[in-house]
Image 1 (cartoon, rainbow, N blue to C red):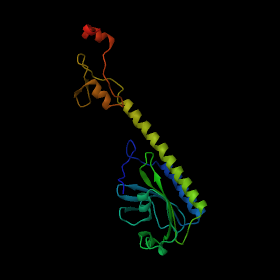
Image 2: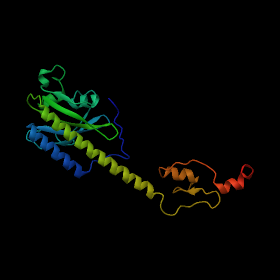
Image 3: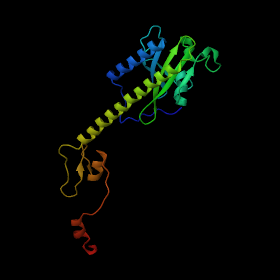
Image 4: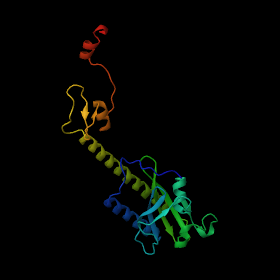
Length: 226
């Protein structure tokens, strides 16, 4: 299984207003597909967490529940490993799935898709589970796929917002008075150390330096070459 490394500029926190939208998605899915459980799962480190669970009657899953993922045998583990849709119509009739942990909760059928972060890492899954055999129609598959893509669009917008906030923070670090040596042009940082101008600006922004010689310095220091 691939290591889950955040591609966000800093640790991703899904804001409450976004979780509310995802809650509506889960509830709509459970109602339209007439299943007890619609879930949005988050994968971090080696754990899978129920991030959002539908409020439908009989849902055995609850937000905040976590399980170690690697080697767990959970439906979602296969979705994350393969990065593809998984359909299990009846786990009890399937040699591969008849002993998976979700059987203990009575959920014998599963349909799920992976949810991807903007740069391709797996965020988690969106899935529905039933207590009865269920092959899920093509219409239901398309509906679940549309909600998957909507959640990925939300994550893209969140990524862009966080990136802009981090960029503004970096810009602000270069505002205000900077102690600079009148002779060598080194800058004193917050810890009292003196750094070359180029090193200081590079560490506080996305700017990179290349060196050249201006016309005035060319005349003064390299007159023989002019």
